[in-house]
Length: 148
Image (cartoon, rainbow, N blue to C red; front, side, top):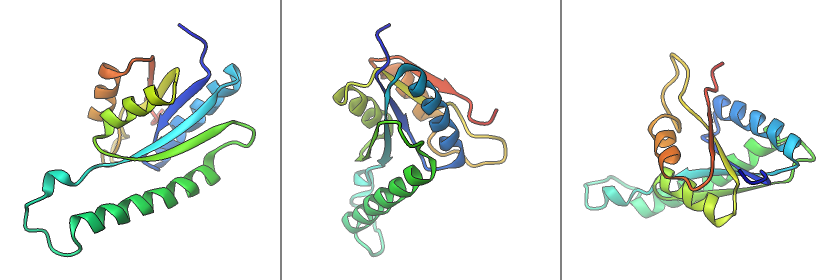
């Protein structure tokens, strides 16, 4: 395995994602690595042609994207440790594909992602997205249960 210099951390802005981020920060400190935090706005293209009430899908997608960018800024301000080099991106498309594509494009040496959500909490990013990232990534994937 090569040196770990950049860790990609997908987020859904939940407390569980923050736990994954905090673990990634600990690893980044040990390896003198940077962190790349990403959020994926799922494409609404699959719903084109349905009878969708206003606003149109393009407007809704644009609003979701803008909200996600604001949420990313807040998430990093509240949770990113000072002194850790980091970048962030809000992506659009299929979450597992975009996570893997972004990791490759940014030269990430590892993806760190949660495995599932806790009992009593609705499923968000984790689960099948994590499974598909593990199966398709071209770099090591460290998955963790953010509930323990």
